Image 1 (cartoon, rainbow, N blue to C red):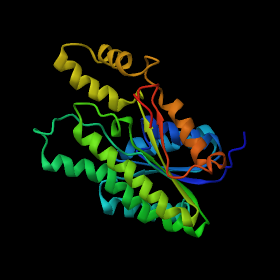
Image 2: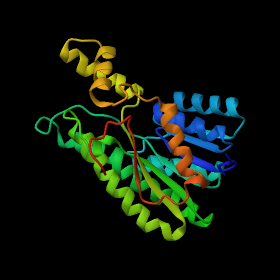
Image 3: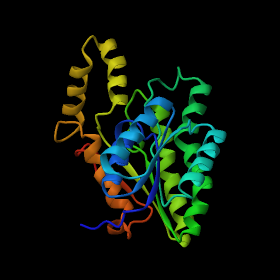
Length: 264
């Protein structure tokens, strides 16, 4: 299937590991030029170099903490110099949390809000002007099933991802007149390093292993009783960003192994 992605230029935040890295590799496979951003400079540069080697496309590895406005501006300048702009923006940077409403600090709420919500506002400000000049573009934001069906132990994550759903809808309404499509992805159980980190914390409290904890989570929540792989999830991003997904505007897509209870 011809997806129309060859030669497109893409920036993916949180792109050095997990879903973000799988998305970057999937776009590169289709012939797109890929810039990936992440905080760890050594890792993001190494993964970008590997993508270039594996797929023969131009890549950039940018060390960036997208919770910081000045870091987004620095990334914008690098991308402008090397790519001239972008056609597709994937806002994927984020992290799980572990707290209760009563024991979480204001500082943690603000930090995660900046990471999940304000980073998406700021990357739009930075990169939508390039899309306008090119006649259009695509933005995909990574939310979570927890934005709709929350887990008890991460109220900050649940709340900020829920806000991201609304932000995506507002962006879609605002940008479509410039032929910029915005949609949101809400993955369910995806076996990323972040899940292993969370499982390690919670498994210790329950006196079990991280693997046994994750197996229990899959059996409890996913109807197919397993975690998805980042590579499986990446295919949905590629489709929605491609010419094949051009009629989709302002929607939220659950890719969750049947976890969501009810109809939305």
